[in-house]
Image (cartoon, rainbow, N blue to C red; front, side):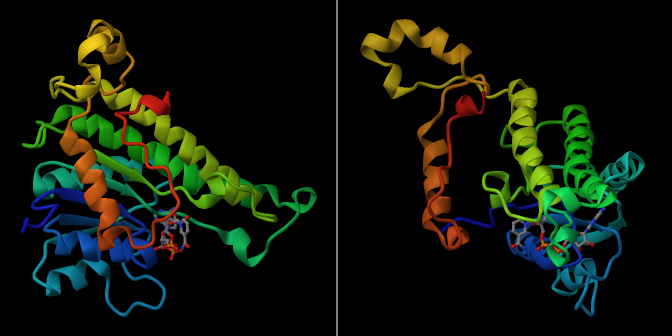
Length: 257
Ligand SMILES: NC(=O)c1ccc[n+]([C@@H]2O[C@H](COP(=O)([O-])OP(=O)(O)OC[C@H]3O[C@@H](n4cnc5c(N)ncnc54)[C@H](O)[C@@H]3O)[C@@H](O)[C@H]2O)c1
């Protein structure tokens, strides 16, 4: 039996007031995280209590910071308030997003240009700014005791890989998030300071190629068995109940290049 998986990790969740973001806050609290809820406003549609108050009532730790993710000034203030409250940031969940086209899908020749730009501004620029300013903070602070500098989870969508008629702004914005995520992973890969470990696949005949293989790994180290076991635990658990048919690359960023 293991303990809570996010014990005392400081997590910023954007778009926290309703939907998926609110449930992420709930589950992160259950796993021991200290929360920073951020959204345009504290109460989401159909909710009667702000997410941070809901968490606090359950005995958790949570604050709310009003944030428009498309504004750099808001991101700076969000990170500053998080550090003032908890001393550091461990996790950023870039969940906030809009899909106003869902109510009014238009073929490409009819698309309203302001609506297109709005999707890119919130869904893509919002994720870009979040990555930029949280990585700045990650670099300033001590590593987490487990040796990792920080975690960023970006919400894209299946429309990053398939088209959806009438949703040009949303699909373009999410495709950009998927591509950006790979680049951010490569930009920060070398910040991880864990040392290289023995890799069974590099024993024997391949041992002479060890340095060349290592140089190709963005994370700067070989995988350990526990890296793969952890991914397997996730996929085999109820946490992955809605995940199926995916290729989850547990490869230190090799195929992101
Ligand atoms: N619901 C789905 O089936 C689905 C599928 C794939 C991806 N997603 C993605 O998951 C994320 C959450 O989706 P959801 O269904 O919970 O959406 P939702 O509309 O229920 O909630 C989105 C939240 O983001 C907030 N938000 C919007 N613009 C913002 C801004 N500029 N700054 C800060 N916060 C802002 C909203 O206020 C809202 O609380 C989105 O990125 C969405 O694209 C959702």
